Image 1 (cartoon, helix red, strand yellow):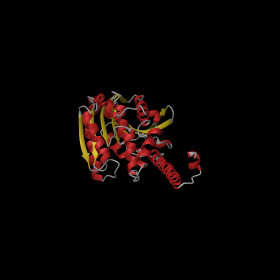
Image 2 (spheres, one colour; image 1 turned 90 degrees about the vertical axis):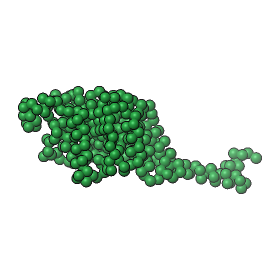
Image 3 (cartoon, rainbow, N blue to C red; image 1 turned 180 degrees about the horizontal axis):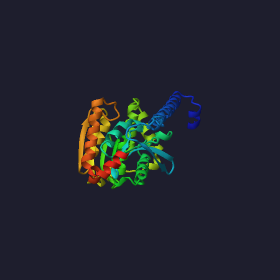
Image 4 (cartoon, rainbow, N blue to C red; image 1 turned 135 degrees about the vertical axis):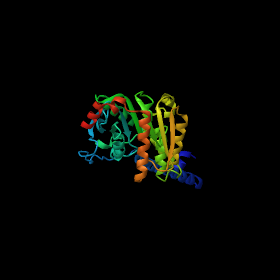
Length: 323
């Protein structure tokens, strides 16, 4: 009896049972693959634009600042001018969070004399762009900082960075290779984009089902196979020795809280850590927002102070009032 012919046209009970089991396994794997693919799509889905915000009469007189990416065209950020020759604080929004949500924080930091740049880390402000959870977004931050550095009214040698989850990963990744970063605040940060993919897949509620979570995580890996050599942040964390760092963890997400505390543990001094009940993007109450903003402002004032002439000098004061 030809075994292949028997499975092609089963006549015996055991061959029929095996053929049915193989067919069931095949369609189970196919269905799991389709669902996992949709889960990955949900993770990297394009973010929407928020450019409907009109900043014409917004306090602080923000202005557009443009920069280009090699493969993704032109981007636009919002630059809030501070005192002449003051350092710049760059705000890096979180995963699928628009720059508009960081405007109150930008205004609070600008009020103390800093230049502030806010931009859409996933390119959402100028159109739709798929998230890579950090593989590509590091280039967005570098390009934005390069645009600020071309201005002649800022301290080009000093930057402060703030970011949450995706923004925190990007801020840390760029700080590890840019000595101009003097102060760094990260909230709910993770070590590698694959880690964030696992968190987001888990949030979809079906990752615990057999095969789905594993398939989806592997799907994200193969989707970004060209970035497979990207090292985790912890591989180069020693480069941050001497950079002032503030880590913020929240009790809302255990996985990101654990990763934040683990990266903090490996990070060289100087560093500080705080555990908050709610993160910046969690719909804070008015008092919580003020506490959060005051914590950040105090950190930057302490660790990246404004130059004395820019703060106390009459020329700087008149320049600031002119703005």
